Every structure is written in structure tokens, then in C-alpha cells.
Length: 541
Ligand code: CFN
Ligand code: HCA
Image 1: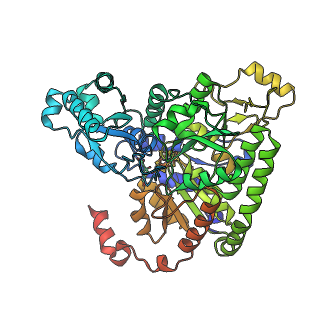
Image 2: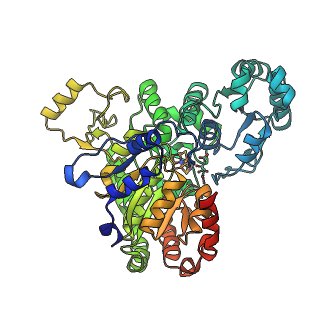
Image 3: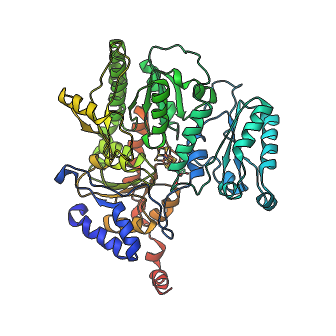
């Protein structure tokens, strides 16, 4: 076993040696050898800090997080990028978030790319006039329910007031128009863009429509973006269980769903990193409790359905959920049984975003594969280290208001949801505290956890461990595959999916089986293996 032969601390040292002293000091905090089994505590990891200039990062920008990630999957808001054409054009339809308008009359603007196409003269004299004209033009052409505006870097630099333009045009046209100050350079990654988008959608849309929908068990699904059709599969399962989905933030979503989201009984959070802000705000303003769920992995899906049923404390739902699980599992176990002997013991590395590098480890585990190194691009410390929660669901008199009580490891950074005295009292009452599912707690000891991994570090890991599969994004894909290691894109799923829910698990098992057991990778020779003079040349340069 390659992992038994390699001392991860030695490898970390070797990686850091190549960096200048100051850079090495910074990177050292973001590269951690997991010691969970030996000391039963997660170590501190450096996360959500600025990438050191010069390092090739996987990260994206604030505009990407706001416009692409959070607002991108909503079909009927016209999203106008205010800026030179590049940002709009290159972020157009790259994320494979799918949508299905319920009828032919429902709008779908996702296939369009709207931009103000700023020119030199707009940078010099200001772009507000052009933005006003773009909003008017979009309105005249499409008559949408809402228009949103996204600022790119130059907009912030020249000081266009996108919010006042939005206010004026909202008044003039009588539809909802709002803007996001999500200039790419803000914050340290796309994570800042999630926050800006969540604040905006909460302020301008959530709560506008009080219509109470039919349904016995009404939930919102937060942090699910319908990549490769994931949300369709989750919808199918929820429907089968009799659970009503009021809104999804924001996979396959519409403006009306956001406006009505506050009428749900419960918020379920899948990608905590991108959406915890909305859950917290909805709890604060509308008293809607939230629980974490995860539909990546068949066992995780079953567990999440049970958790939702447990919240409603309704025997009919509890029984229905068990029936659905019992109906879905045989096919999954059959395929898993076929695939597992071929995949058992093989190794994976996952370096993706802010939640998938953790969630997908479950799916690999189900087919017997080991994650030997993983990390997020932009997650925060709590996504790695976890937080302490009381897993016991506490139900109030009318069986509706549950609380999943939670304390944090770092009260200065994360608002504790209960005061410490209250927690002490609950502890004394016998509530058991458990650390919630941060990535590091669920990974094996001696695995390398690396935040905001660089291209150089990626290549070093591959050279040393030669994993059976590497999971990352489009920028990493071909560089990794030139080493003869298959790369599965866990952002876009390449051309595959869905991978969520029960049917998704089956798709994933089959796909990974094909990839790790194909001989084609062993035939591949990197350019520098075929022509060693190439690497010699680069070494001289
Ligand atoms: S769909 Fe999500 S699941 S929202 Fe987030 S943290 Fe990105 S776009 Mo790429 S695939 Fe990725 Fe996550 Fe949440 Fe996607 S792991 S990086 S910003 N992400
Ligand atoms: C983003 C979007 C992205 C990029 C994926 C990739 C996505 O970060 O702006 O690098 O392949 O999922 O589309 O994360």
C-alpha cells in the first residue's frame, strides 16, 4: 500500500522546501496531516485566506460565486453582467446547472448571455447610462418578472452606482430590479460572492409572496444547484415520500419560489458552505429551523430522508420514507455488489469547491475506495474542522419546532446559536454533544488535507501517490490526465450525472468503475516522458 510507505509529514516538508521561506510559512498552515484517530481532535487548518500571488490556484472570483453559482441556476430572472464582455461571455453556461420550466409558457433565460459590454469610453466617463439602457432593452425584449445586475471588477473601480440605477429602473418599469456589488476582486474567493448573492436575494425577494401552498410536509432545499440534473433526482425522491418542495436555492429554481420560500416548515441544507447565510437569516426573521442533510451517497440519502421524517414526527411520513428506502436500495446494492470487487482498495483524491470534496468521499467509500488526500478550494474552517452540535432533535409541544442545537469552536468567528450557559444546562440534562460532519473528522488519520491546493502541489501528490482517480475541475483535468491518471470533474460531472440521490449513486458507481479500471491510462505517455529533452529544456530555462 503506497500510503504505508509514505510519511505524510516528510512529504509536506518536501513540498514546502520548494517555496520561498515566507510562502512556505503560509502554505504550511493550509497543509495538514490529519491526526484524528491518534488524538481524537481535529487540528486547526488555515482556510479562507488570500491565495499567495504567483501560485496557480483552482479558485474563482466573487462575481463567479454570486452570478454563476447562486443566481446562475434560476431560470426566469434576467441576469445582466455589468462590465466588459469577457466576464459575461466566459461565465455563460459553463456550470451545467439544468432547468425545466413547468410549462411552455414559463420563461427560461438561462440560455442567454446578457452584458452591458462596457467599452473604453464607459470606463472613462462612467457606465451607468449604458446600464440603464441595457435594463430597458432587456425589459422591452423579454418582459421578465425581475432583472438583476452583477458588477464586475471595473465597475467597482470606476464607482458606478449600480444600486441607484436598479432603484430608479425598478420604479420606472414596475418590476423587481436589484443589483449585486460582487466585483471579482472582493473577498478571497467565490465564497464572498455566495454571501453577497444570499444577502441580496433575501433582502429583495424572499418573503414577497405569502401564498400558502398545499402540502403536509413543506421544506426548502438549500445549497443544491442541479448540476447534471441532481435536483431532478432529489425531487423525484421527495415526491415519492410525499414531501413538498417549496423552493430550492437555487437548482431548477424560479423567482416565485424564492418569494414564497418563507412559507416552508423546514429548511434543509445540503451545501452548507454556499448557503448557511440564508438558513440563518430565515431562522432569524421567519423562525424556520434548519437541519443539515446530504443527498450525495445512497446511505447519506437514506439518512437524510429519515432525518427529515424525524423532524416532522409523523408516523405516516416515517413509514413512507422507510418504504421508499426499501424500494430503492436493492438496485443500488446490486450495482454496488458488481462494482465493488473491482474498485475495492483503490485510491482517490478530491480537490473541489466548498463541499463536494467532502460529500463525494461517501460515494467512494460505498464502493470500497479510499480517499487519501482532499481539500476545498475556498471553504472555511468549520467546513474542515466541524462544529459541535447536539444531534438529538428536540421537539416542542406542537411537534413542529425542532432545534438542532449547536455550539461553535470559534465563537469570535461563528455566532453560537445558543448561549454557553444554555448549552451547559442542556449538557447537564443529558443531551449528548457530537461534532458535526466537518471533512477532517471523517477522513482517516495520516491523510493529507490541503486547502486551496496549488498546481505544483497537485503534481507532487500525483507523482508520489499515483492515485487511481483524481477529482477536480476543468482547469486541472488535462494536466492531471497527462500524468496517466483519470480525472473526474466533480463540478460539472464531465458529461454525466446525476450523481445525487439513489439513481445518482448508481450512475456514479458505474462511471468510477469504468474510469479506474480502464487500461487506457497506463498507455498514456506524458510529453516529457516521450521526449525527456523537454523537461531538461524547462529545467535550464
Ligand atoms: S454546485 Fe456547489 S456544492 S455551491 Fe459551491 S461549494 Fe462551486 S460551482 Mo463548482 S461544483 Fe463546487 Fe460546491 Fe456548494 Fe459547484 S463543491 S466549486 S461554489 N460548488
Ligand atoms: C466557479 C464555477 C465552477 C468551476 C468549475 C471548474 C463550476 O467556480 O466559478 O473549475 O471546473 O462548478 O462550474 O466551480
